[in-house]
Length: 470
Image 1 (cartoon, helix red, strand yellow):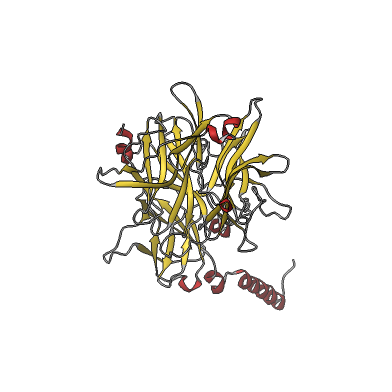
Image 2 (cartoon, helix red, strand yellow):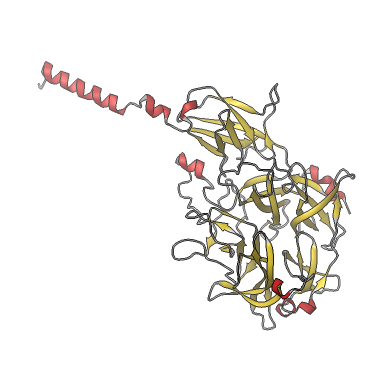
């Protein structure tokens, strides 16, 4: 029988001992592991994006679309640590000193779940645009199949159905390679069933129109100095039934002044909008026209069966017949009266509207609007309201505040009526989340200057005041 000599036996034992030491995690390995924090809604147990945890040393950690933070501060590992909770409508109860936060003991390769209470009526679903939608989760080895966007931030959206798909266009766009990005609109296509089912975390796949180097193409490189902004975005048919994607453009000069307004049309072959008619130039020395087909668009059939396109931001200010020919003919445009303000749900508050949009809602069988308040509180351009009407012309009923921000802007909300499920109480809307126009807040990493998606449950009892208003 084969047996080991004392010497060989010692060598065998020593080899296994050294291998065990090499494979055993060291204190340094433990110290540099990640601590997973998951933030969820206390009522629904769903992930909550855009919740910030801040240490007493002012380290900031923000949840991604999955409500996850990969906590990597080595100085706090295995150490009792206080974090403040800041969530734009999501919070935890205050302690005896009025501080809203909690203590954690971050331990590498472990996780902890916290629950926050939603104070806003609207529920935050997640970020639609920009980079790092699931960055925190990916640090932990999750959602690795998710592919990054070619943009890091973008301004407000215009969207319409075109050739059987949803065609999205965003304003001034940031990219990774340089602070100056694309200032002539960024475009992408999606399926019309993009939100047929709302699976969290949201992971929208946009088919961006890109240049050969992977950066976004300019959708509207219209001649003239300064950025190009498009609004009044709509697809119309001519007398032969041919589809035309059209918009109203503005050319901008510093600081934010318009020096030209005109009409433009999408060219499928060249994949860009081209100017077809100039409505006004500042250099002509004349005041800008009052009738301009801009803002967001909706279709409406009046009591006589006439089909119209309504242009407004949020409420209709102009209309034209639902034809390509009428859109190209300024003399065929009709101005509409716009309400100056709405009554708030307290019946004492007067709400002056700024930007927003309207849509027909099949569940409510009424027209609905989500709009930003002009100089609201606590955020001058971050307070959003909801109202209803039997007609897009009004009168609009009692307005109910549905969304508030802590010193941050959330402007140009767009109701995604086309992408919301029919006969469902869920109304989807998005808006531009940015530190611009707020009182010097610290920009939120990844989220700043991007589009964030919300849902509003129209059967929520907190909307009762609005739904009863006739």
